[in-house]
Image (cartoon, rainbow, N blue to C red; front, side, top):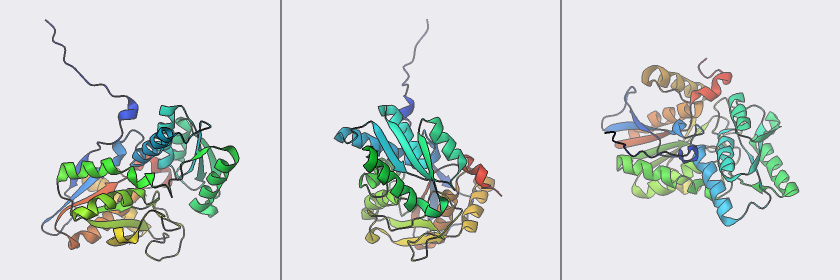
Length: 301
């Protein structure tokens, strides 16, 4: 007699969220402190921005905001990948405005998922790409998801916050990078009222700590203008991390923990280690993506 066991089969689109949380033990920490990393590269599209892309498109479809079947956005890459997956699920056409400097691997993935890419000048930064996307939407009637200003951005991380509290109970400190500012804001809004110290991470060349806007090798984080939905009251500390420190942390994570992560994860780890003396208990650091989409940027050199 053959006994059949029931299995649950997921659609690829269901593979967003529920990412692993692992403890990092190869770095020196103060007594009474444990350090955990949320590995967001295990989402279907390989980054934390899968959560954002799905939420932005699902909500826009629910509201009936996409009238032409076309969506536009400005992105460094990971949000574009998340949006491309969500647009595939809803049969929508996606156009993305991407500054030329960002990784060719992410560009290739966005195109593979059916997105049309329009490259913008590196010198114009993300502000230039945002202006081009907004002009496209005005000209064509396409839906502009506007990740940098939409309140739906931080709301995309409700499930992420719930996963952390379900797995750890109490979170003494949350550490997350700021690109659009949505991941940090969403987590801080939900965890700060529960007593968590909130640390936002940026590279040198970002303006949160009062520095001048400029170029940096650390990809995926860094802001040119203060994010509209990120209030200063949510922030307990801003850590501005050099490219050298971020890339050094990337290499140490590979050699010591076997974790192959992107430069924004390296910056987040460096920030968490700097801030560890200020808390007792569980620190959670968000690792947004993996290193394989940055090999052309010589991430391990």
